Image (cartoon, rainbow, N blue to C red; front, side):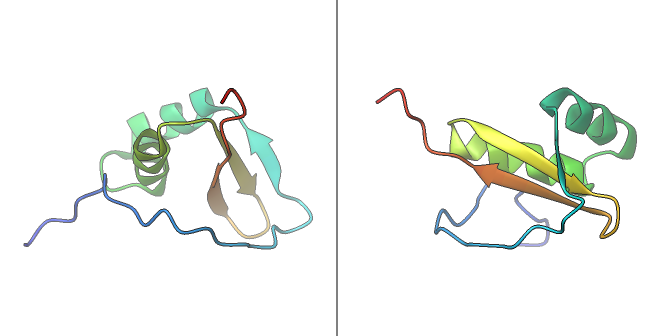
Length: 78
């Protein structure tokens, strides 16, 4: 099983405290970063997780931590 499958994720809920400087960023910005950094980037992994979720997501970024989070939000249309 040599290569990592970026499209398979655990769907269990996890609570994380975001740093005070974490801000919501657009999917478009995450896509731009992923296009520049490539397949192995955290941005590409975040997009894969968002696709696997299949519902609405929110992306967060913290400058102080240099970290990107994907919030898998509940689809309130149902």
